[in-house]
Amino acid sequence: MTDRESFGSVSLVRQGDHRFYSFTMPSDVLAETCFVVNRDENPIEGFQRELDKKRASEIVMPVS
Image: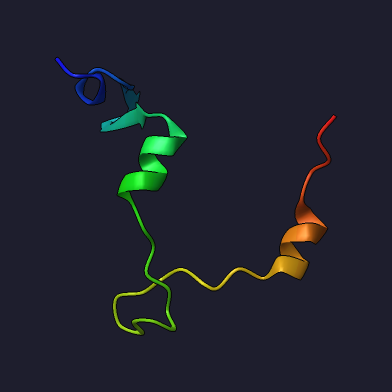
């Protein structure tokens, strides 16, 4: 196996009759392989709003 094939983990979560899978992976791999289409770029398939830096700074938690 290559390094790319051997990272992450998968867990099965059960809630009543429902089954869910949780997957973890390094954030750098996620950033390299995924993207978000915002509503301005594609009003039909886009879903992510543009970053509101002022709002983000209001809700950020200080790092200790």
